[in-house]
Image (cartoon, rainbow, N blue to C red; front, side, top):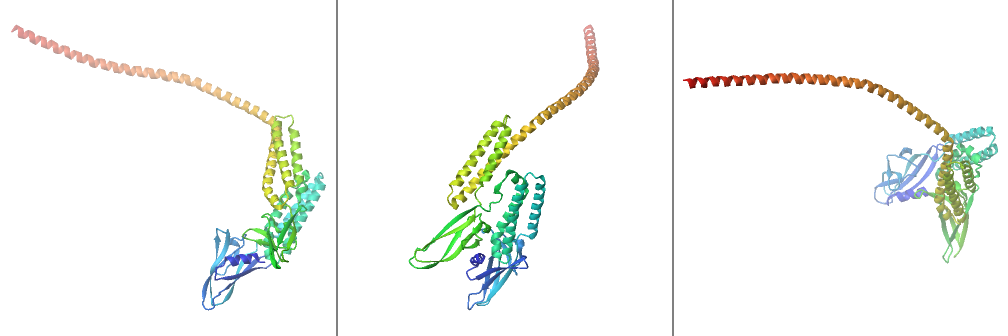
Length: 448
């Protein structure tokens, strides 16, 4: 079953019959997609539109050659597609080839770097000797996981669709391995047996029934949960593994012959990627117990008890929920909730560790605080002395300024007063002289 071909056929317009397939070339360098366009008319030449939807991982830069067609983006589907028009004679068929960069592979150099990083980390930690046995065991498991990814990619070298299906899972797994390599010392110290969960598996039971009274050839299909990658399917029970690019999920399918009213049951084995390992929960308990013991007798002990109670409660809820699960659907539904509980546990442990750090740093903080206060007092004292000196000098300057000001104002006032008095005296003399002349004239008139 060619899933991508089915997608491209659905994308073509009604007058267009399109068949496509991928072929890898040039040693993982280029993928060539071929679309066969047919004019179904027996009498008319037609200019037919072509729409060729690209796989979800492809960006515009990954399209190398389109032969005069343009690359567009479909916002509703979130996919790039190649579009154009082809003029065909009646019943003419033409093959269009589109070259795409082969992005569905992990470079050999990345694997070499992962091996080299693991070797260096293992050698460094084994020199200390404290966790040598744990480091050796965990490093061996991590090396086996890298080998598995290399083997899977190599086995699908000539099967581009299989490489497309497994690429995302391979990339995520390699990134997880890198993170665990960097945390190797911490993992070894905790004795975390959950570093590799390859042996944890669950059985997926599928059933199909022919409810008719005659024999039939039927297709049995089942869509896997979104997080499941091809490497997580340990035993497909004879089913073919396919990928739906629109749903973004794997599904298993097989053709089966059924007798009248026959019921068939299939058991697939898949890796349990949803359970939080019991050993990890035990590590959380042990670590929080140790921190609480260190906090005993300190002012932060009561706060530590509250955080410890929250940790224990979340651990118990995770255990109870995982023990009560009976089918894969419940397991997937609980996974999101339990992951949030796990994050809460880790957050509470970090808070408890912070309490320890604060207790260790508190004496130093007290000394620093005292020294800082003394320094501030010294600064204040020096500033006060400078202000006093300045004020002492400034007071006399102010007094002198006031005295001079008063003298100047008094002198000005005196000068103005003298001028005013002289002016008033002159006016009074003129009035008196006039009155004397008038009296003399009156006396002369009376004598006459």
